[in-house]
Image (tube, rainbow, N blue to C red; front, side, top):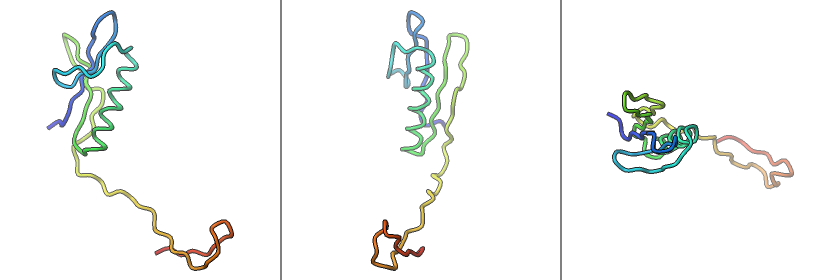
Length: 100
């Protein structure tokens, strides 16, 4: 099931709005800006919550899914190995280091 769905709809005078359900989040956007902003909001929501997020463009006759971020278990984040200093010299002086 989709976690959140943001919809991009035509508002007035050729401009567009972004909605989440019945709530209008942004209005008076040019089309390209509405798409970029909607995708960015969905990406941030997915990254912060791990839940599914998507953006759809909704017209009176049809809707088009623009982007979908899947609801999946959070991947393990790759971490760089920790460095343990072996000498007392500074990093600028070329200290010796070893991987943990």
